[in-house]
Image (tube, rainbow, N blue to C red; front, side):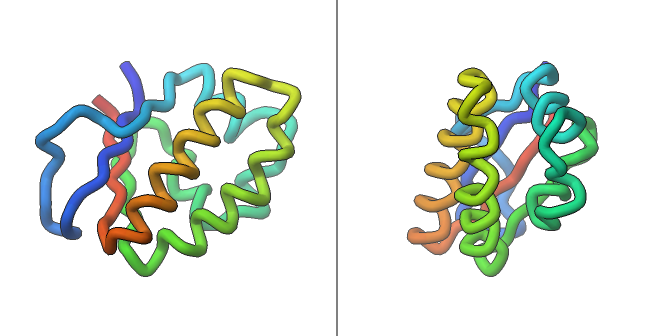
Length: 108
């Protein structure tokens, strides 16, 4: 089971394609329950704290989410698996923001 990240054309669209990236549970736990205080400092990223709850980031959210991700990314430089997933998620969110899309995180 993984938390799948999909890029959608609108807030009402449903995922129909392969996920753009995935957060496996150990990666998710390292981000939200590890040594970096993500929950306290990053309100948009914090929306993903519940691994089993779906999360939507609207077009309006994505630019600020990318800023949060750019700030948190160096904090995980010493954990390459987590860093790779966060880096990919940052790229996905940046691209979605530039294309006017939304990002939907879905636990499969």
